[in-house]
Image 1: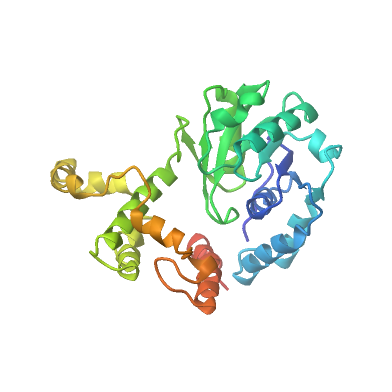
Image 2 (image 1 turned 90 degrees about the vertical axis):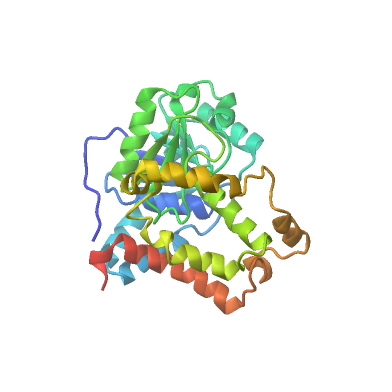
Length: 319
């Protein structure tokens, strides 16, 4: 069983604005603390508890939590469609999780600032958009940071806390602290740059992977296998810069001096990617992307991801 004990924290009331996939996952994250009440807001009446229950029951099935834990966590997650709700007006921390639309995010945060207390901390969950630009309509910009949760939010430990041009040290520290308290691995992105930290690295890898296929060096399945059965296998234990130190920076320099000129460095999406998009080959949603997928293969890929993550994150809890 995983439980987060009570400590002397100022954040007791958390508002998750937007009850989509990420919002529900983030609500589940904060439910790990018994001293926190979570208000999940959406403009539509939806059944938010059932998907959260399914995620918690998956943890039950792996022996990570008990049925009693599931019920107790669900009891602390409230749902509302009203900005007049006490959970909205009395929020200590707001995490906005709406659609990736700049003006919509700006307007929503400005509205929430007019409703919430003056000392409320505001965060935006975005994977690519500039938090500095998102907070432009806020009056108290120093009380705002970016928080990039990774999907599935209730399992991936990393949260990138993105400092804007205005974020105060105190707010950054408090957000980092509460995220650690609910079991996340917060990392600080010191500069508001496109892609923040992890997505910059991830899409550099994707660019090279697509280039290898586009240039006929290997097919898509081979590229994925090459990642899964080599450096991808050891990445959780041996990340790039530790690996560079391990093999020696002199060797790393010599390798880069030879190979970097041969790697993909285009600043636009691949022509192969553009062609597949124009042909309607969009991946799982069309059963054909870089590879062809049956409905059964798609379901297996999706369902096995959470099982894999749970087994990796909670190896001692497997039943």
